[in-house]
Image 1 (cartoon, one colour):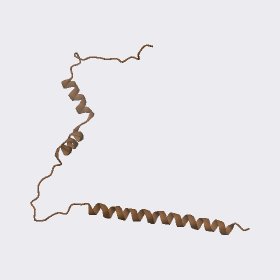
Image 2 (tube, rainbow, N blue to C red; image 1 turned 180 degrees about the vertical axis):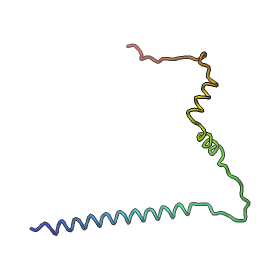
Image 3 (cartoon, rainbow, N blue to C red; image 1 turned 135 degrees about the vertical axis):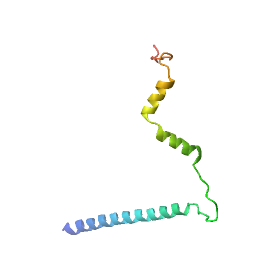
Image 4 (tube, one colour; image 1 turned 45 degrees about the horizontal axis):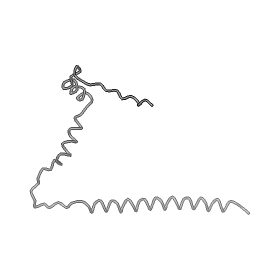
Length: 95
């Protein structure tokens, strides 16, 4: 039996499957985009704008942005006394 038509069919099937996967992915992307857009809160133009800083979560995010290794080192040098500390060593239990 000649094998050439089988190989051509397999190539066509691979191409069809790839196309199907791409189309399915595109459809899922469109559906998820519509769902996200539908979840947005509508803006009422008649209300007065109020500043929303995000509460403590926003403040913590700003704090973490300012936290650098140099700032930690400087704080440790300022507030930790190297003459007053306890060094603890954990050893395995004797059997």
